[in-house]
Image 1 (cartoon, one colour):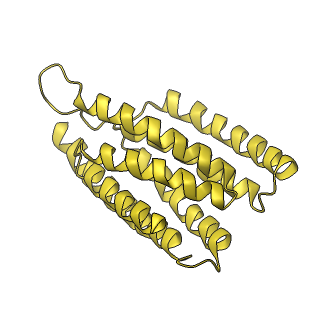
Image 2: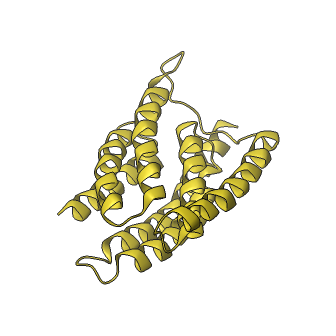
Image 3: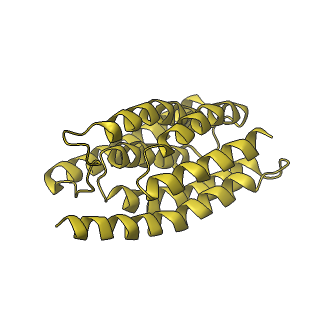
Length: 189
């Protein structure tokens, strides 16, 4: 039941965020808080950290998407490359470091994959809250990796297919989210 609730809340979150609806952050926050429990059961420690972060970022996104000077919604923008490229370099370093640390100190059987999904998702979520369109590109990398991670970690548990299916749908929705936000970005120009 927990997994099904997380999947439903996750889908509601993503659909509403794609449509630039502030209420999506509420569903994302609740779903992420519930996902933490599932992560602990599967020994996905980085995912536990990640979903704790999502819970906090859900509150941040809710606040940020509600802040405007003239009651206009927060606009979709591009991240500056002089910010984005160093952030990607930091991500690469963190993936290697966290993967090595988890490989040595935990029983995580996929430490680098878990670290990769986590670190890319941390950055993508922050970028989504800031409405940087490039967040969708990061999701197009992180979500397919999450399909693999959850396929391996949850199989053959009951309802093992729910999380891989969710992240497969997220991958498709990330492409659509990019398309939607790109239209808004062009319209604002």
